[in-house]
Image (cartoon, rainbow, N blue to C red; front, side):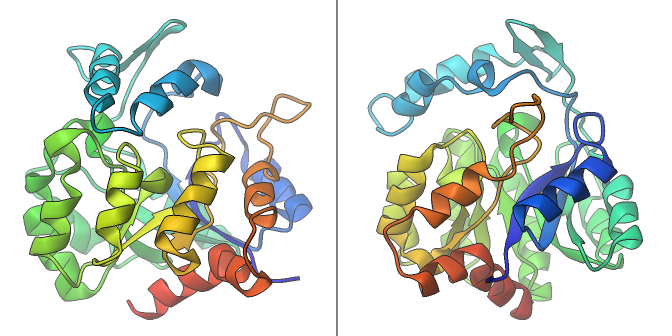
Length: 291
């Protein structure tokens, strides 16, 4: 069986314990996981978090402002997430230490992104230097969508990351909170992985990405199987990475995380076996080897 690496999953033991996570990886045949530290309280079921109607609005530049307006309604003045089921705290400083401790316990199974936030740290370059010294650190995760900052705040960080040849996994926001064009043009050697198939831009970003150093992961209920297929068709299998966004969404019969859901998307894609192997692991390994 070909190697399978989850390039985008969260370490959230309040939703999926370490033992349960490893058990699910074994059962699903997932060999390795690139972890992201938790940035928020445990979240409710996915349909409330990402209605399909909002996903549809984001697929056109004409209706995307409506999706942005819906998103702004979910953020409180304190920067937390407000949903029908209640308020969920968004952490300005995600807990990198816990993820790297898991990497230390299971170095053969886990890697980790260092989750940084320039809005919450005046010394984000020092934060980068701190976490890149940790074993298993592969790059930087950024979330201007929920941490609510414009991406120009990232430019000093991106300059240093480009020097270090570290990739950036970024959950883009709307408008200036997700200005992928400015990032790619100002930092042409920075390897950018746009989370969730380029949320919230999708096709607009795929068209631009063909001429730039941009990849996407195919994770999360922010997208569906049709969007995953469309991303691969538009960008090519060589620009797409398997990811899950575990433990969010895709509940199994025990109301835990179903690690086979997104794997099934890739397995059912109308592409060659070699292209599926690239999506499952080859592209991610190439990004790491280039670091």
